[in-house]
Image 1 (cartoon, rainbow, N blue to C red):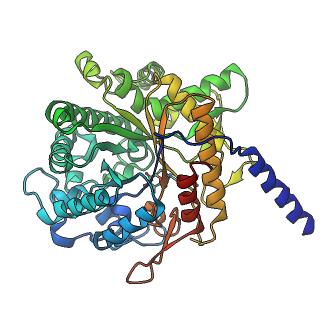
Image 2: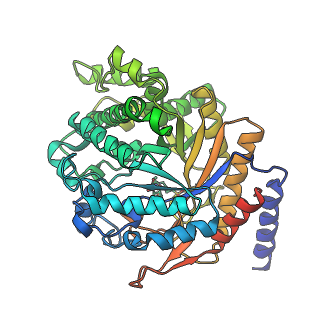
Image 3: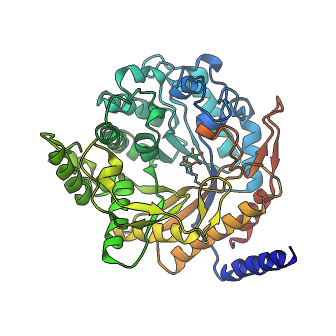
Length: 485
Ligand code: GBH
C-alpha cells in the first residue's frame, strides 16, 4: 500500500514538473465556459416553447441511461441571473451558450415568432454584457424542432432553408449585441455518431448513404447562414461567424508509412469531411476517391458521397471567420486490410482500426487524458487549413461523482491548458481562446445526469438546483487571473 502511495506522489510530481510555468497566455488570449440549451435550460414547454427531438426522445424508455431528461435540467430558464453571477465569479471573457430553436420558433418554421422565448435570450445577453462578459452564441446544438423529423430531418435539402431562415432571424434579433456566432456544434456527432439524435428511424437505410446526406445538408446550411451574414448583416453588425467541429486526435500507431497514411485518412474522414468544404470548397480528395471507389464496387451508379457543384464549391470556400474546436480524446490508428464490400457504411469507408495505449491515464468516463493530442490537433489544423484562427470551444473532464474536491479535473485542465500554451509558443498556432466544458454539471445527453463536466456542482435533487463552485472553479479563476497554468 505504502509503495503505491509513494509511486503516486512521484507520478504527480513528474506531471507537475513536466508542466512548465514559463509561459503566460498572450494578452489577446481569452477564456470562457460553455453550455447548450437543452443541457441546462429546462423550461421545456415554458411560455410557448415548441417540442424539440430531445423533448420527445428522452420520453422513450431506455434512450437515456438513467431514464432522465432535460425537462428541468439546471433550470437556467429561470436561473439565468444566477448563472451570469457564476460566470462573473470565474472572471471569464465570454460565455458560450446555444439558442433553442423551438423557443424562438415553436413549430420550427420562420413564422409565428414566440416573444417570451426571444426575450429570454435578450435578457441573458443583456445581463452578460452588463457584467462585462461577451456572449458567444451557438445557433444549433442538437435540439432540432421535432416537426422536422416528419420531413426527413437533415436527410432532406429542405433543412437548408429552414436553418437559413432561423439563422437570419437570430442575427436580426441579437446581432446588435452578439459579435461571435457558431452555426453548428459538432455536425459529426449528430450525423455520424448519434444519428438517432435526429429523431429519424434510419435502420432501413445504410448509414453509408444517409450519414453523408446529413453532413452535406449541414455544410450547405452553414454556408447559407454564413453568406446571409455576409450580405445582410456583416457591414452593420461587424461580427464574426464560425463553425464548431469536434476532433478526436488520430495518432499513427507506429512510424510505418501505412499507419501514417491510415491516421491521416481517419482525420480527413472525421474532420476534413466538414472542414475542407468550408475552407477550400470541396470534400477532401481521399474521401471523394474512397467513397467513389467503394460505391462503385457496391454497385451504385454514383458515389454515395453527394457532390458539390463548381458554383457551390466557390460559394463554400472561406465560409468561416474562425474555426471552433471541441477536443476530448485521442487514439492510436493502424492500417488494416481493406474492409470487404458489403453493407455501405461510413466506418467501412474510413477503414483503419484504432485503439488506446493502456498506459494512458483514464478519465472517469470512456476517454483518456492525452494532452499531447490537443497540441497535435492544433498543429494539424494550422498546417492543413492555412493557419486559421482557432477557438477551443470545448474541452473538459468528466467524472461520475460530481465531487467538489475535483483534483483530477484540475490536473486535466492544467495539462490541456499547458498543451495550448505549447501550441501557441512552440508551434505558433493561432489559437485565441480556451473554453472549459462546462460552466456547470448538466444533462449529458444519453448519459443523463450520471456524467458531470461542471466547474460548478448542481444539486439535481433540490428543487432550487443549487449551484456550488468546485475546486476547479477556483483553479480556472486563478489561471485567468495569473494568466499562467
Ligand atoms: C460534446 O460532445 C458536446 O458538444 C457537449 O454537448 C457534450 O456535453 C460534451 O461534448 C461532453 O460529451 O470525455 O474523454 O471521457 C462530444 C461527444 C462524447 C465527447 C463522449 C466526450 C467522452 C470521452 N462527447 N466523449 S471523455
